[in-house]
Length: 258
Image 1 (cartoon, rainbow, N blue to C red):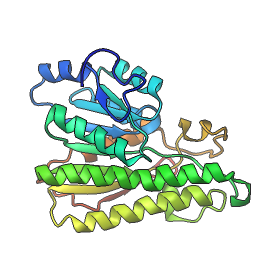
Image 2: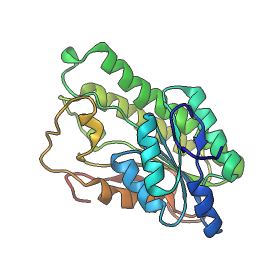
Image 3: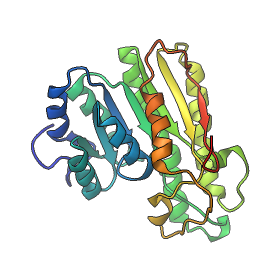
Image 4: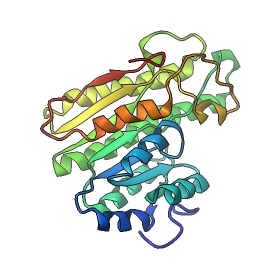
């Protein structure tokens, strides 16, 4: 890992770049964070906040976007399709190889699948399941593998307020995000230690590119801004091993208000 062109095409699941190494050299007390899905929306807003003080690795599935964000934030970036286990495994392994430890992981990679089930193309359904369910599973599997090995760290999964009540217009999206919530709850109970916290954040509707990337319009009239929710995500990521917040903490944000 290293050299110019961080996050550039062809890096696969690897993490590359010089920015974070330089930043780390200036701040010996910096912590190490991985933002999965950090090239836009909430992930980008959180990565921007974290990069002010700490080392950040941004993972995304579009090479040009990863390169642009890594250059902008002065951090490391890697191209990683979360639905491919090998890429997730290799990306996390490379972060650990470079920095030794991971203090926190923000899991916010997600694919939108809005509309009636009868109208959704099979490929859209499949991709939502691959990223929102399989991808989340792979990310949490690898994150917890490394956190358990080192004995501490935080994972924050970004769900959606939609999982708390039925939304008939988004059955597939809600179902796949509900999968993530169920997985996080079970994993949180399995930690048996507050030193490794597995938490979840459920934002209300946010004006991000989640829907735009598949050609859907943003229809919700009241929403939370990614920058507002990012502050809470960063707060959870920075909790110390001995902080009283326990694994399983659930934070809800709905209708633009706490």
